Amino acid sequence: MAIDIHWICDDRSLAEHCRQWRQLPYVALDTEFMRVDTFYPIAGLIQVGDGQRAFLIDPLLIGDWQPLAELLEDSAVTKVLHACSEDLEVLMRLTGSLPAPLFDTQLAAGYLNLGFSMGYSRLVQEVLGIELPKGETRSDWLQRPLSETQVSYAAEDAVHLAEVYERLRPQLSEDKNAWVLEDGAELVAQLRRETDPYELYRDAKLAWKLSRAQLAVLRELCAWREREARARNLPRNRVLREQSLWPLARTQPDNLSALAKIEDMHPRTIRQDGEFLLELIKKAASVPPSEWPPALPEPLPIEASALLKQLRAIGQAEGERLGIAPELMLRKKTLEALLKSGYPNGPYQLPDSLRGWRRERMGQALLDCLAGTGDQP
Image (cartoon, rainbow, N blue to C red; front, side, top):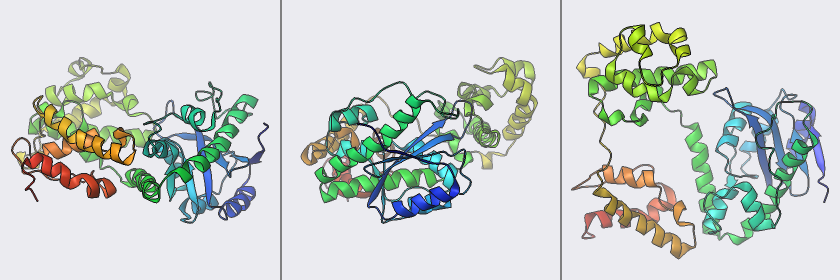
């Protein structure tokens, strides 16, 4: 069946279509972008589906994104996307806005127990019985003109995404639909939360092995790397490779020759930023003990894995009862954060990452499991 494709290539046309879309109960959204040598994604195409047609917005020709921003923020129109974390970055970069309410079809498939983390092609095959062509995901979306295959691929995405939504939405109970939207709102909130560059050292590989004095150096290195990646619009590893962070903080080289011997240190980094890095390390190493970061907790010992398994079983049992993919219930990171809050003897505290309906339905059961007696408040 031929797809009805409409191109939107100027501000006036975008404004008019956004006005029309705001009269609809939902729109399906997808993006194609390039992100090979940049920190930020570069939009190559925005696709919109209204249930019947595919609209292809050429971002290289649009100057005024305000109408699309207003559509994204219109609470009366559900925005349907699939596995959308990178799409959200594209939309945020273009419009300064993010979709609300957001219905992610990958999440919806999990809530209907069709599968966890399903790829788009597999979901379309499962729900619509349509096999999508492969091979355009890695093509150059900034080239003009786009090939016929690219245009067809992009249009199909928009049309079928709308069809998938129309199939999945009626199968969701009101509770489950609310949870899909709640998880969508959390995805948006995560992107809005500006991570403080000075907090990134906590997640660096093996950071827990470093002394507090060494952590002070790691903190500066991680913060500098993040700021520079954003300012230069380069991938983080092009500024300073991840594998180099820990040995830099541990050995704290004080000359270019020692810097060159650091694991995975790229010659380009030494050439461009070597002298600066040496000065940064020297300065960070000289801060007084009162300004050192606190020591980081060690990873959970192997003995904790049995307890982790018990906690995971609470989520699995609840998922089975509700007919939800078990992987959607309790994230491993959340359970680890819960255990770390009081291991081995307690008391334990529910982590902030356990939010919303999951906290309401499973929070107390998790604490009771850890308390062992069921008495813990």
